Image (cartoon, rainbow, N blue to C red; front, side):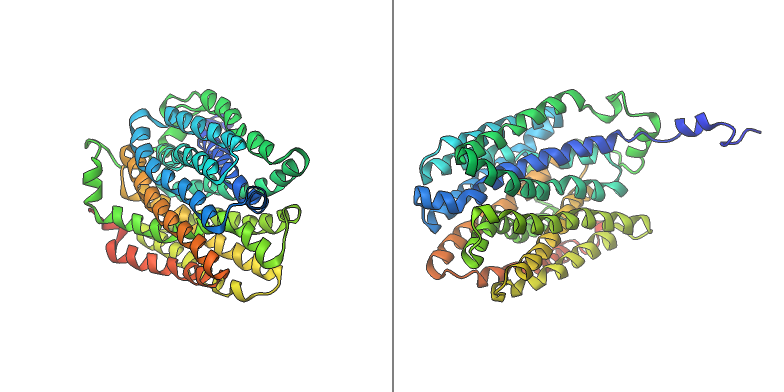
Length: 428
């Protein structure tokens, strides 16, 4: 009788291909570019505030403009991507946001930047609904949290790359070129996406074994796609929306106010901003991959989906609490490390929130539900951006903001658990 050792070719044939991870890499780079484009304004904000002369309140409104269009766009993008499919949906999304990113270079007032942010938010709203739908199409449930954590870590890499390249471009060529050069990256990514992406069953580089793995724990989807109204009638949709509404604003605060916080509190100018921001986002990057890995690890250990996801969310909620002390720290690096820890907690939390969407809903409805919960997070961010601008204009203090940041994740987890006590048996 022949053995596998006597038939090494059979062993090779039976090994699944890894095309799904190459697709995940494309999602990672798209998310990286997404965050580079939205981070450029935050890095240049201290310089632009001096040059153009906007107030804290006006800056808050500029950030709110992005959040507003991002919220509306998410709701529309989810439906559009479910209808058009992920390939066409991504092409439309990244074309619009790259064009808008370049458009910032032609703004000369607070109002002009507000218009550019409106367009950017509308385009960027397609990234996460499309990416999460791709994950649900290309990965079995046991690998989704890790895959989501990997592509979601692109948000931190983007926030790391931006402070490396944006100050250099702005100092040597002017701030307008910083928007133009970074905005062109999306058009480069489109070339790779158009050439490489196909559905798993149609992809020439996916073998039978990988396709079987992808479909190994998929639920049969004979039922028609749910309407948005049907989705909104479920407790699981509102559990996800509450979790995003309460916690996404904390991430938006870090993204748009961290450079200003460092500048105001520790007198860090644009040419010295890179290292503290890179450090914080590197820590956050570890949180995204780690949060996805530990959830997937719990499942492989035989834990239920309920225990694996909620335990990971609890770990993240506990990790963010020390950020309460940041406003009282007088030296730079201890504050940066605590902020980095809080950001890592958020990215781990976010990876698992998106994975829950694929646990709760079938693939054909992924775009709609991710768009809806993303909209909830963007609305929360919009409210916090406006409130932060007014609060800083009135008090000049970040203390109350860090108190809110430390407590929101625990509150969100309690609400999620009350609405969905057992993920494994949830029906509505």
